[in-house]
Image (cartoon, rainbow, N blue to C red):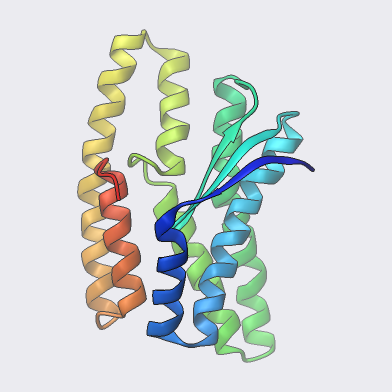
Length: 194
């Protein structure tokens, strides 16, 4: 398994430092573990599809992967889907283990992994769901019609994501890390550069 160039976005290190300074707990590592496992799903799918990674960019709350070659819409959709699928599988493994071992940390990881998968499957710009939907639209419709459908789905998803973010902030009692992640997700989905 070979990865071409690895780039670290300037805000990546800053975000990690803030994340650990604000939380200073094993739960911070648990969130990072779930995010890394999600990205491993994409990487495993890339190599299973016979592609290679030209560039891996580490972003504040995720990664962006550029392939060496175009793999086509079907394979790209599979690659996009494997991140959330890995997250759901991890959650399915950790839920029973959290009960068997009566572990709050394992339960937290299971919920976190499930939450990351659910949010990522939304068809909002920059999310895996948007890549899957884009591939489906471009493969099945004329280009102009596909673009119209993509833009409409992104708008609907941005509204849904905003509701999820507000609910997460309210129910987490304004947890600093979750607030930062939610704000990042909104900026990312709205197409703003960070």
